[in-house]
Amino acid sequence: MEKEIRNSEGAKTAILAVSFGTSYNDSREVTIGAIEQAITDAFPACEVRRAFTSQVIINKLKQRDGVEIDNVKEALKKACEDGIERLIVQPTHLMNGLDYRALVDDLRNYGNTFKAIVLGEPLLTDEEDFKAVMEAITADTAAFDDGSTAICFMGHGTEAESNAVYERLQKILREAGYKNYFIGTVEARPTLDDLVTTVKKSGTYKKAVLKPLMVVAGDHANNDMARDGDGSWKRTFEEAGYEVQCIMEGLGQMEAIRKIYVKHVKDSLDRLSELY
Image 1 (cartoon, rainbow, N blue to C red):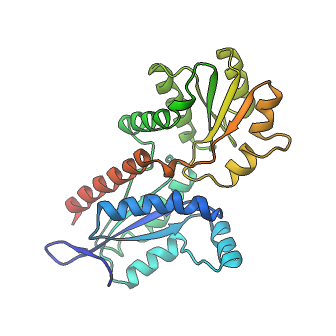
Image 2: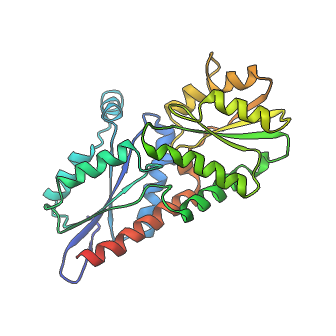
Image 3: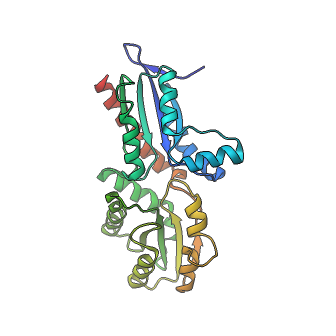
């Protein structure tokens, strides 16, 4: 039987969890799936639905595995057809980047379709979020914080202004005393070269731990970070003289990270109540 929540006037409410997506099935279930489950557990009266923003991944999963996942427009259309009147759209995106802005555009076209619709905040939005993420990633990697290891996180990076979240998180780590924590990106700045240079200048580290600063440990983590081939983060750090260990875990596997998304859904529910 479909789960639902109704306000005093009988409006049906649902939560649409929107992710970029990944074709790595094992990582998807323990990251995106775990975030969706955390939201479901926190709001058991609400139906939680899934949508991906990457049509490439959606098509690959359908062709390779026979798994059908809605894109955002399809999910919104189905929500309308199913009689959803109040909708919370909670992205699992890290920041307010290009995909998040595209999501805003998709929702704008449905502004008059639902009685009320609220878009939740991405993972790194306000100061409380940054502090919570810092505490989560440092606690998760505390076993490697031995003074001789550079703990390096691989962000995706974006050409949007929101790429500044990486520098902001790095600054917060420094100010909190985590001098051996470093952040680089795959597609923006700081680049891999920037990262290696910074690590070399920052101390006499012998080892480097590499971990994705992404919700899933997907294509970038497997191919850009952990593969043995030329140009990978692993090979580049090895060539720079470091003993390297790659941790193939996405942020979504961390309970503390999932709690941030749950809080953002709670904030959206409060806003939704004010609207309708």
